[in-house]
Amino acid sequence: MLGAGGFGEVVLARQTSLGRLVAIKRLHDHALAGPDALDRFRREAQVLARVNHPAVVRVFDFQRSDQGATLVMEYVDGTSLAGLLAAHPLTAPAALVVLRDVAAALQVAAGLDIVHRDIKPDNVFVLPDGHAKLGDFGLARALADPAVFRTSDGSVSGTPAYFPPELGQGTGQPDERSDAYSFAVMAYEVLTGRLPFDGAGAIALIAAHWTQEPPAPTEVVPGFPPAASVALLAGLHKLPEHRLLPHELVARLEAVPTSMWPAPAARTNGATGTVRCLPPVSPVVPVLAVGGGRRRRWLAAGALVALLSAAVGIATARWTADPDRGEVAEPLRVLGATVQTLPADGQTRCPTGAYVFAAEIATNGEAGTLRLHWTRPDSVRTPVVSLRVQAGQSRLPAELRFDVTGQRPLTGRAVLHLEAPEELTAVSVPVRYVC
View 1 (cartoon, one colour):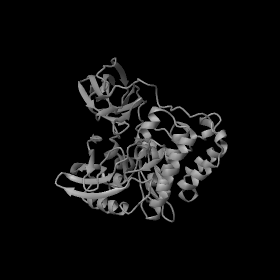
View 2 (view 1 turned 120 degrees about the vertical axis):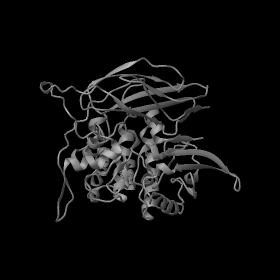
View 3 (view 1 turned 90 degrees about the vertical axis):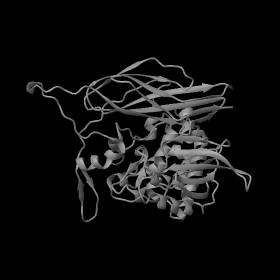
View 4 (view 1 turned 135 degrees about the horizontal axis):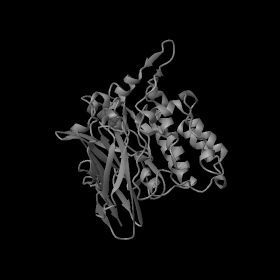
């Protein structure tokens, strides 16, 4: 078992006829986004099977069974880029090797009219020699995954943190230039240690991509090369036609002399071993202009929230008690909780391993206090933490960072325990630290 989750599982197998190791990804029926998702997934798998490039995870076979869809792929004995970034920052030369390989994969895919649609560090696998492979082409469109944004017709367009502005506005379709934007976001993240945009919730984050300008990397990292900063901002241009393609962006970055790059930028997303609570999401969403050309369509705030609510579960309105009328506010209640794991497959190797467990707690939006603690994968219990919930704060994040060192293997899970206002647990995927 290489990994498992609510959408399926990935196992390591041996293809006996050829004596080679393969990765088999099994997708459960309930994980598919719609009745036509399977056919679309099959067609894209057939197209991707024609791609023969060292930076693309190859597809060998596709099968359908009563339990779901099965994809037989090349086994990549590496670590996700997300896992590497969680463990330590990359030097600029090492980062450029990874970015160059991903850019080459996207260039080959674009030549075959293949759009990835979900470029992010979780889908990049880094090999022991530092080179990278890009995986999960087209898979994002097939999965009913709430971590990715869906348009009104149910198709998947990407992950909010890497979301192209033209897709958020509804003025474009996924293409080579939208992949280029997501690639530039990832390049910015790898080289600066942070994402170009912040947002308290998916709506705010998606809107930030077309309403805000990213901070220049020279303002984020002391000593960052100005030429590289200009190149990254060009890759993040709001207008697709003015955006650098991935191979063009990498060429500009590689033109910067190695001696001009500063030391690797440490990530700025919290400290090891902490549980943190983000501020509440404002329920006020501005009216947004969508579209262009001769006709201009306007998407009201309610329509935007309705479009996103199925994916991110954001509350759009709440009732407020009026004491003068004898009305009493409902007490705080927890509706559910989930735990996501980085690296997504839960696999790390000695001499060090770094894990991030990100929980999201859904409430009824009333004010109150949450009490929680974690059980780490090594069965050690963390201290109880109290989080003050403000009225209207219906989604709260909590985070556990867990580092492993030494030659002793470890298997286990991280468990989030909610103690008050009611008892509830949420469990991560299995994690495995091997030597």
